[in-house]
View 1 (cartoon, one colour):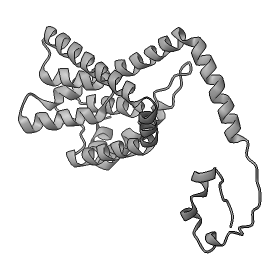
View 2 (cartoon, one colour; view 1 turned 120 degrees about the vertical axis):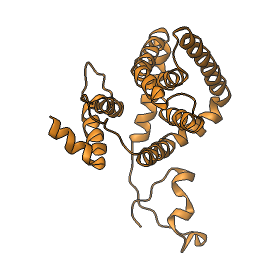
View 3 (cartoon, helix red, strand yellow; view 1 turned 135 degrees about the vertical axis):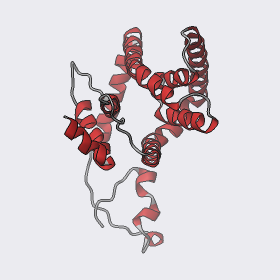
View 4 (cartoon, helix red, strand yellow; view 1 turned 180 degrees about the horizontal axis):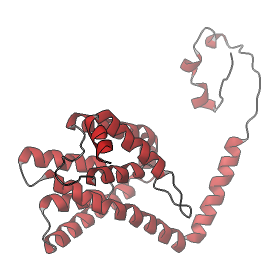
Length: 237
């Protein structure tokens, strides 16, 4: 086991992709319909971080690699959630933002009060707040701030985050279950409407067209924005 750990410790890319690979596999394990998904990578990373026999150095990834990973994480989240974010702003953006602001204020107040009562350090309190929200970019910002300002130990934030993160996931799932039970009638009606819309979208038909409008001649298909304007997808030209 020590020789295996030595091999992993000698190669940072091996450690990085081993955690990602094992975390992905671990996240796919389904128990009664529940699986961790990408959060499995976090828990496998915690395991490797805690794997430190007495008298050995901890397994670690360089700060530059972590920064690149964080940038890619935030970038891909923006790509997948950007369209829905701006669409929701048009529909219920003000209400959502007010609810979010109130939740953040309430969560911040509760975390500080309980953290002070339990005599936790500043880093642990900040890490617990980030973990309760499952917000990895916020944890990175806290760690960077603590390192640059010298306020406390940045590792305390990571510890607080690691402890609170599972409860943040389970708490969110529990809240959704309670919400679905309280508003079960509305949820059933909403699901029926969503299913009917999905069936309408999946009923495809194929047709051939001949373009006769001279204003459209010699123009690229992308420039005409056919799908955006009338919902037609041109598969062959």
